[in-house]
Length: 109
Image (cartoon, rainbow, N blue to C red; front, side, top):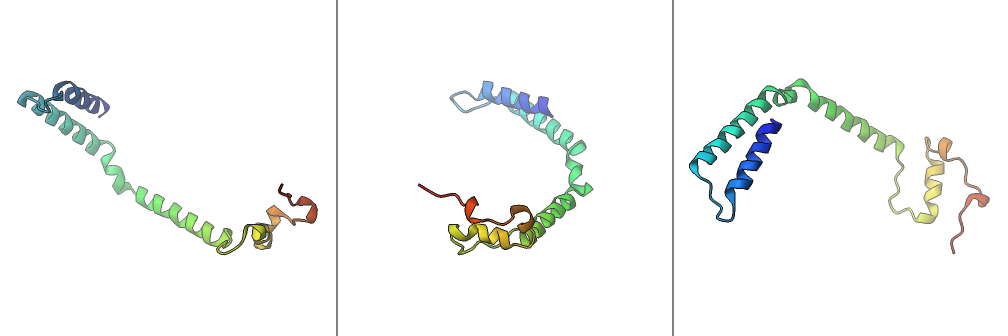
């Protein structure tokens, strides 16, 4: 497959030129190389779509959706000054973030 793609690119780059035309012989060669690529793809990578990779991808999308829904707090209309409070009050992240005291706040210039 890789060889046929490289050969198609080489033939098109060498023969197309400035005039934008390709002779019939090279056009047929490009068609044959594309057919070789399609046959190789159909024999190797093509059937993988039927083997359940879409279910694998869909499963991970579901896992990510559940993670966002349950583990990331809503921050809409929360000012930056109150953002640490959102994380401290969240049921899961309070164990990791801990309690922010006055000594842990960063003062700006």
